[in-house]
Structure formats: C-alpha cells, structure tokens
Image (cartoon, rainbow over all chains, first blue to last red; front, top):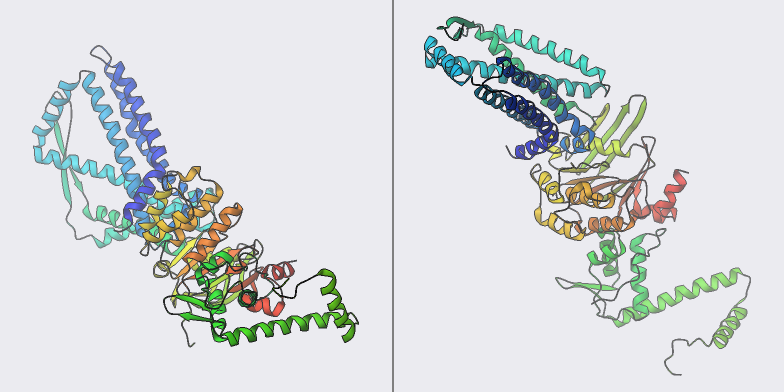
Length: 258
Length: 136
Length: 234
C-alpha cells in the first residue's frame, strides 16, 4: 500500500475545513440543548439532539463532493493523474477520507445525544429500557441486532459516497457542466440496480439470515419480531457497490482527461 | 583555478554553439590568456556558466581534442596542448584567417594591394599601435 | 527500426470539441537529449506533453514510451510538470517534496536536497506564501528529484522573475546527465532556453512545422532559434 498514506493525508486535508465547520456545528447545536435541559425541563427538549443524525448525511454528501472538487479546483489533479498510482487506490483514499469524516460526525452526534439524555434525567429510564430489550432477546441477539443496524448505517454512508464519486467522475467525462451531475447520478444509480439484480441471481443459493428486533413500551417487557434478511439481495447489493467503486477507479486510471 | 572563458553568457546564438566554444578557446590560446598545459574549466562548469547543454560542450571538447588543441587526462581534466608546433601553426592559421577577412573587405571597397598596405602602415604609425612587441 | 526510441508518436491527433489541438503528429525522440517544444500559445505544446503523461488520450494515432503504451508502467518512468501549480495550501515546501516522494518509485532525496539548496528553497516555508517564482522553483525541484527516464516540463519559465529563470535553467543543466536524462521542455519564450536545447520542434496549429537539431538550425539558417521562431510565427 505504498503511497496510500500520502493520498489519504492529502484527501483528509482537502475536507478538513468543511468537516471542522460541520463538527463544530453539531457540537454547538448539541451544547445548546445540553445546557438547557434539566430535571424540570420538558422531555421533548431532548429530541432536537437527534437532528444531527440527519444532518450527518447531508454533510456527508458535501464532503463527498468536496474531496474531488478541491483537487480539480487546484492543480492537484494534474499530479494525481500522472503519478504511477492505480485508480482504485486514488479512489479508495478519497472514500476512506470521507468515511472517516462521516464516522467522526456520527460519533459527535451520538455523544451529544447521549449526554443530553443523561443530563435531562432519563438515565435510569434508558438503562431500564436497554435492560429490558436485552432480556427480551438475550445479550447475544441484542449485540447481533445492534451490529446489523450499525453496519447498515455505515453501508448507507459508503453507498452514498461510492455513488456520488462514480457520478462525479462520470460528469467529468462528458463536460464540466453541473447539470450533468444529475444525469450521471441517475446513470450510476441505474447501473447499480442492474449490478444488484445480477448479484441477486448469482447469490440465490446463499441461505437467508434473521435478526430479532424488540419493540414496545419501555416500561413493559417489549415484544420481538423476527426480521428475515434475504442474503442474496444483500450480497448482490455489496457486489453492486464494489463494481461501482471499481468503475470510479477505472475512470480515474483509464478514461479521465484534464 | 582556470581562467574564465568569455563564452560565458555571451555566445552569439546565430552560430553553432560548439563552434563558438572552440573559437573562444583558440582565441584565448593565441592571446596567451590560456597557456600551454593550462587546465580548462570542466565541461559541466562551462555548460553552467554559459547556460548551454552539456552535450554541446562535450562535442566542442571532443572536436578540440581531435584537432589537437587540447588533451584530456583521465580523471584530471582537459588541458591546453603543450605541442608548441601545433600552437604556432594555430596562431598563424588564425592570423591568416584574420588577414584574409580584412583584405577581402578592403578590396570590396575598391582598394588595391598597395593602397591597402599603405593604409595599414599609416594606421600603425598614427595610432601608435604596438604590433605585439615588448620593447618601448 | 534499429534502435528503440524513448518516445514514439505516430499520426497523433487530438481534438477538444471543435478545436484540433494536435493534427497528425509523428515524432521520434531518442534517449538522452534535451528537446525544446516551441510554438505560440495554442499550438498544441501542452496537449502533446499531456498525451505523453497520460493526462489526455489520443483520438487517433499512437504514443509509445520505451515501447509501451501510456499507462501506469510509463507513468513510473515519466516525470511530468504541469504549467499550473499542483500544490495544496496546507503544504510546506518539505510537505510538497514528501508527498511526491511517497507516490513515485524513483524519488532521490539526495537530489532533492541538492536542488532545494541550489534553488534557495526553505523546507519550512508554506507553499501558499511563496512568490510565483519560488513556486516555479519548487515545481522544478519536485519534478527533477525523480530518477525518471523522461522529464516533461510544461512552460517552466512562463511568467516568473528573471533570477528564478536563471536558477531554473542552471539547475536543469547542473542536474542533467548526458545520455541518461531526456527532457522535453515546452516554451513560447525561446531566447533564454535555446542554449540548452539539442533539438527543437516547432509546433504550429497542432502540426509539426520544423523538427531539427538546434546546432543545424544555427548552421543552416544562420540565425538563432529565437530568430527563426520570430520569422516562423510572424
């Protein structure tokens, strides 16, 4: 992986400013509600600290575009495309950089949310709730379910970045007109669904898997439902993601022009 | 430390540069600016000072070696030839060339042989130019 | 073909929209010489270099470097210096060297240190605070610190102060090893660089107008390359 570190550092630097502004935004927002909640405050005061989880996705999109745009605005792209580094490595460094930003912002949002909940006096309630969830489905099942949700969240972030990166490079192919981004997005999205359905057929033989999802009134013992996942769809989707990523690397290495 | 050759920064870019380097060395030798056995600047040094391609300088040095003007001692550098006979003939060759140029130009002005000779001696008398002699 | 050429282009043609940037260019360049690629703005110099560097791809015709099609393998042998600045604002001079050093297989730190000293560059200086001339010097230090087979320098002297020009030309000569390095340098200001060219290619509207050795241009035409340049592009 010689050179990957250098590329990653460059890409982190290029989104640093945007990411810091976003992080500080989340921090200030959470801080505002954190300092206003207390034992007497109405319970809804905790809810606004959930908003950053939505913002994280919008800001993720911004960083995802920025990591390419910055390089094109400066002359950096001239060097990136003439050094002997394969396209996938260049693309992977950018993907890694924006995913680090995404994860860090998510952690900031989560910490803010949890601290606010704690300060608002819902600590006992939260513990009881989690406890009853675990009792309903066993600890192992609880960990499995949580991991699947976390992984799903991460995959969503990766998917957004991979599709936008492929689209951005498609857009650079034809011309630099911005409206083509829309068309490129559509094309890449369509390609991805094509890949996914191909993957679905390829992986038909893989057995399904299920997770237990508890729900219900936190003060009662929650009910659980079995959610069954069709593995072939998921594998098809991961294959589609990999192919879309490969497309980006291919474009960078073999097709893009400056 | 070898004396600086005048090619430095001043070559005339309308003639092949390697020929100008050779001419410059010849002129320096004839005028005793460079003496027999004296070391020439290294090819790289000359290239840097004159801002010309090292390959061009190399070509000039190679040609000078072929004509016997310089000799290269392995690992030591390039030196002006010690061959007095060669240097003398170089001097006369260059003098002949200069005279030839001069005569051609004056003849082109319509002067004849005796007029040219008369002009030259008048010139020496009036300007008090010393024809390379040391006594005063 | 008796000898393997370092660069070989055959009927190279490249269009950008309606503009014909290169039109049927066939050039062969052996290893170990300095080639001046001259011509006015828009004559196709940059496009030619970009095609060798792999930044653009031909519409028709071929480019071979060391007998190979342009790709990752040839990029490992070619050090390309764009006309535009490739640096990022966060970089110091040292970072800029470090960055490229980590991305190419042929970096030579000894050479880099030597060039920094000769070009009067301070490792700690922030790139965004450097003057245009100093940035041009840094670009040269970055591209010439590689041990590449082929150096492609796009307008390395364009729009910078005279002392920087002199430094840049001298460091090109100083670092040049006869027979080993091949440099293709594009410029529209010929007077200062013509001494270092061994061969000169005149481009005009995407076509090769003259392709001759520098000394034979002087011998045959009795004029400097600058003089010929002015006459050709009058």
